[in-house]
Length: 357
Ligand code: PHE
Image 1 (tube, protein in one colour):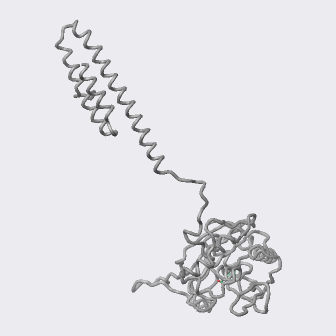
Image 2 (cartoon, rainbow, N blue to C red; image 1 turned 30 degrees about the horizontal axis):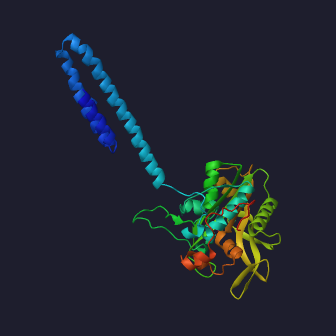
Image 3 (cartoon, rainbow, N blue to C red; image 1 turned 90 degrees about the vertical axis):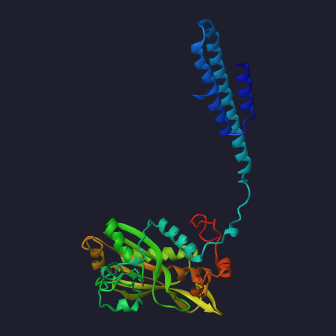
């Protein structure tokens, strides 16, 4: 028995990992291990011999088991120490935000305007970019023959041969999200929806994919005055100045009545774009009181509820705020441009800390 004890305690001391330890356990105190075999021999002994051998075997078994668990704990400690040593990280090091790229001006502008509208009580809604022709047009009071469909330079999706349903479209504006949000949420409602939209158009201030933020506020007593106030507050907060000059122009959209387009005063000297000065105007948004037919298409009673909607060009806002003269460069993925106009990844815009510092 002393030999057994010396042999196994020695092996346990030598074991290098948990697998080796388990193999020792099986051959020593497992069901068919050496100690078990010795226990079986007890039956052949005289009662006197058994009285001595029995407790001694049990004691041996206990001793081996506790040596095994002590060694197991020691091995786990070693493994943990090893992990702590190799997975070490100095959390006090300063960050290197520029190493991982930068935030695109469109994303930055979107974060900024979301922060502003959140403060004004608007929550963020979303809708699909591949839209039904009904949501993009009909529900917004633009029936099949309406000239606005042609004006919008719509991209139509392909339909299988023989499929008579109207094709889906790449949404030409974020206005279909008005319908989807009213359907989902009912009234009262106060949402914005930022996102990509598509029109076949390409020049210094137009690209086939660009970004808008839709706004919608419906309740029992919302008026054009509320619309004007919200837009002025927004523009002042976004451009971080008190004296941006806005021009509200009477306009027409099938889905609002009355309607207004809003331009912002700017100059384009020597390819430099500046806001708040000069004799040029840049159109940044369309807006108006939501047409009763549109409210009804969203499943809300237009005799009880009314409100305003607007659609702002996010890329245009970014161009004006950051003085970027050509919209096409926004989507060229030119690294030099991105490094120049991009924003540090760790600065989250908010109204208290500052939007774009
Ligand atoms: N959807 C319009 C556009 O893309 C903008 C708009 C939205 C106008 C909401 C009025 C109300 O031009």
